[in-house]
Amino acid sequence: MVMRTVYCTNIDKMVTQLDVKKFFEELCGEVSRLRLLGDNVHSTRIAFVEFVHAEGAIMALNCSGMILGTLPVRVSPSKTPVKPRVNRMGSN
Image (cartoon, rainbow, N blue to C red; front, side):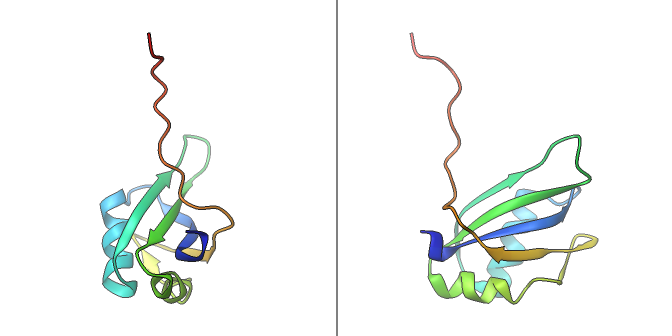
């Protein structure tokens, strides 16, 4: 899964998860999982994008510097796979 995953930084806060997915699917191929993360401290967000095929991740590396929203996105190989969201509700 790591071979199919890229780590993206410098993502405009106005960009939605759907925007990120469309951006990469149009240029690189089908996205299987995506996590878009951010907080109120940093001015930009990050994303982990997992592609169906490893070729998509390789193509995504060439998208570094392309404009996503209003900022040039930075794309790097990910060291970890996309982690599923943790359900924080306790079980009774």
